[in-house]
Amino acid sequence: MPDSRKHRGPHPQDEWDFAPRAIPALNRAVGDLCWLLSRGYSSHGACKLVGDHLQLTARQRLAMLRCSCSHADRRDRQRRQVAQQRLSGHKLDVDGFNVLTTVEAALAGGFLLLARDG
Image 1 (cartoon, rainbow, N blue to C red):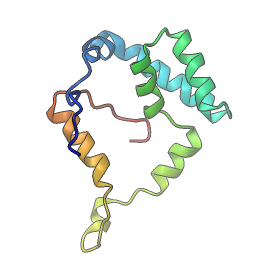
Image 2 (tube, one colour):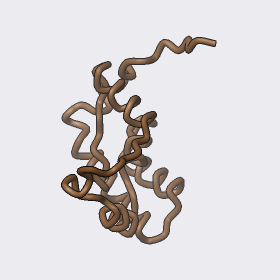
Image 3 (spheres, one colour):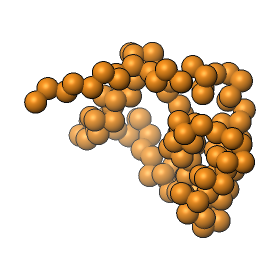
């Protein structure tokens, strides 16, 4: 069955939710959420606490959650990164679905957010 969804471009609310005036609050939200995650708070509870405190919309909360991780998770992910020079001549498996959805969002004019772990 073909895909019949009609929402391939950016969400209509994105221009407002991710406008330049919203970025400082989103950056603070990610910092606060990472701090709470690093202290053992559940992602659900911490996301609600930070989102309520900063009065974030549902899409802003989702972006905050996807851009956040604990300090330990960030260190672990950075430790496992492989330098580009070390990849030459080696097989590399890529998660094509995530690549496709990112490229699709960019080509459709959607917002791309850089997560805390890079």
